[in-house]
Image (tube, rainbow, N blue to C red):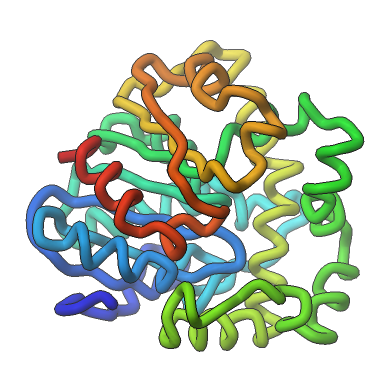
Length: 285
């Protein structure tokens, strides 16, 4: 995976991001979810690299990127802060305009990039995600049962203590057979580090506080995403069951929306990288 790509630690101002970058052509940044690192994109990156310059960072608080200082309002783990990191990263690599692809928690960073930095984005792709407040306003007993971790991770201290007892039991679905041995070992190292566990959990705390407020402010102002938006979802996951039609939701937030489901479980970059890479390539090409 990441054949011919460089591995660097690039200073984005508040700290350094671990980044893989390579390929040639229009630039695209790929943003991972929880509890992944940039390594989740390895197969997709190799498929895109012949036609695109592919940049894959560990988000702040994840993997081997810098761990932000704690703040009472969790603002240092906000998606706005992570989107700012991405813009600084891309500019440091010489890319003033680019496309962004985000999966899971990374989809919220891609969303915030499109809202806050629309002049920098050519296209945005969100995978297995809708705005946080769209989930929260649909919360019922099924969501609380199946997505309970959103609310557990929002609690102080207890999530870190519970996960750190046996990280590989908590993240029991990690498998080298799907993601490859290198990606597996990278994620095992990440979830075995109590500091990284805290950084990842802070992402959820920010989600229910500062990120929620930022989304409510954006909706109240009537701002919409101007660049084309592609919404993809895993047909063997539960996003549609949870929120209904993702396209209907995203059309409230963006002016130009298209999308479809991909035959996969939640971690589509690992489970069906071919169809995912083809969808991204068609959209941003």
